[in-house]
Amino acid sequence: MELRGKHLIGGRIAAEASTTFQAAVAATGEPLDPPYYEATAAEVDSALRGAESSFDALRGSAPEVRADLLDRIADQIVALGDALLERAHLETGLPLARLTAERGRAVNQMRLFAELLREGSWVEARIDRGQPERQPLPKPDVRRMLIPLGPIVVFGASNFPLAIGVVGTDTVCALAAGCPVVVKGHPAHPGTGEMLGTAVHSALEATGLPLESFSLLHGAGHELGLALVRHPVTRAVAFTGSLRGGRALYDAAAARPDPIPVYAEMGSTNPVFLLPGALEQRAEQIAEGYIGSVTMGVGQFCTNPGIVLGLEAPGLGRFLDAAGRLANATTPATMLHAGIQRTFDAGLERVARTKGVRTIGRSAEPAAGACQAASAVFATDPQTIEAEPHLKEELFGPASIVVQCRDVAEMVRYAESLEGQLTATLHGTEEDLRTYERLVRVLDRKVGRLVFNGFPTGIEVCAAMHHGGPYPATTDPHFTSIGTAAIHRFVRPVCYQGFPDAALPPELRNRNARRIWRLVDNQFTKEDA
Ligand code: NAP
Image 1 (cartoon, rainbow, N blue to C red):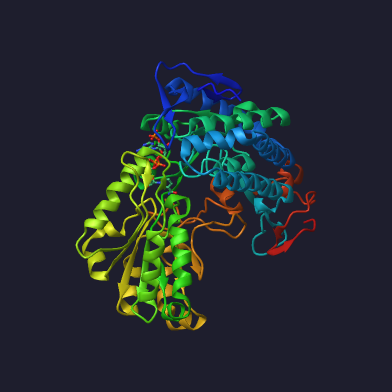
Image 2: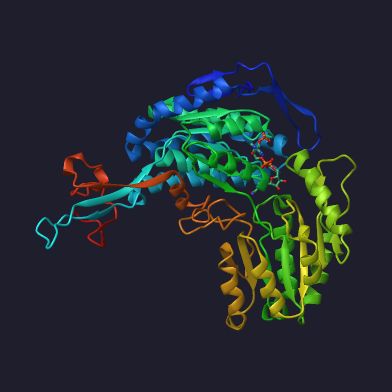
């Protein structure tokens, strides 16, 4: 398809600004056509007013119609074919094989949410039937379910252009819930964003839902994002990116006259704990999985295992040798954009120069000026990491630090000092888990997901997934941004008391026409109430 470099505002293709920006080929830095117009304040207003005007029709649509919308978006994305993957490859540097797999994940997640809507129980209908004759006071008839919030602002992430981008998990959850969406595309891959946005518009047209339910705005500056967050009709915000960006948007939302939620997923160091039983049995095998996880996607995952804590036990030396060898054998690879590469390079050099840190493996250096990352594994001790707090910060790229602990008390102390994390991982035997139970209890207070004998990268998109965690991993530990529970970010409960049956939403009427699971007088049932 021909790219226009313009916004998609409701059904219109629009661009009124005089300023533009250009994406670049990630691998070479060469500018990529077309130039993209920066969204103006009037365009922000138009997109969000349109979203608000479409809300009643979207939330009032039958769940099957929204399920059909999601299936059609998936079909449209597949129909974009190789052109989508090739543009995404140019803009992000991600290999075509990875992008093909990511498109599969994006499309599967749309179909998963379509199934959720067709099944219908996600609205969590609860019915407490009234008892007018109850003594000493009558019991009122009380019924509660989840309803959509209203227009949602989504920030496309740089590192998953398809699965967490313009039509990634955030947009899909919001549309599924019945919320219109305005997306700020990531400025590093606007062409990919435009192709995806067009797919959403074609699907909206085909289902007869209002075109204003979805808009895509482009811009390469903080003002656009802040204007979207501050706009009075915005009801919630979804973001994946840096702590600095997420926190700025969260603060802007909190400073509104009517604060709104910002669900920001901002990353983590994802500590991995190596317990003696596992080290003794399979040190080399763990090292292989570890280096695969550190370098996967050039380390540009929020679940990248940035810190490993290994107990000084037989096997830790073998683990370090194998990890060093494997890191030496990796080759530099293209990063998502020059800003990420510069930050990574500076961070890597700072770690390498820190007194008390040794480099145990490092790939060949990238060619000078290339937007590429070298992979590296470092080793240090608990005292150094305590004295140099920058070592505990996320280094977004293929690098990781192994902390050699003399005893489990040092591991527990480290775990106690952790800020909120998306994940923590334990490698051990079942016996280790019993012996080091204290460590597990400390960790489950700090993280959103605990992994046993695996690695945190490669998140399964499913009903039980929790991709979240205490601050600063996210701004709200109650919610996940991956998996079907992510829909809860864009809904809230409402309770109807004493309403006549016919005036209730279909899910709360006595007749359970959709045969969904409901909690009726404290019993889960699909029967009528
Ligand atoms: P980013 O800088 O956080 O940007 C993400 C989005 O937020 C962009 O649309 C950006 O737009 C906007 N933004 C950033 N700071 C803002 C602010 N202060 N006010 C308003 N809007 C703001 O993320 P990135 O470009 O993807 O990569 C930079 C760093 O983010 C990486 O080095 C890494 O540390 C982290 N990151 C984390 C994850 C994760 O999964 N948690 C994923 C990707 C990146 P503008 O640039 O147009 O303002």
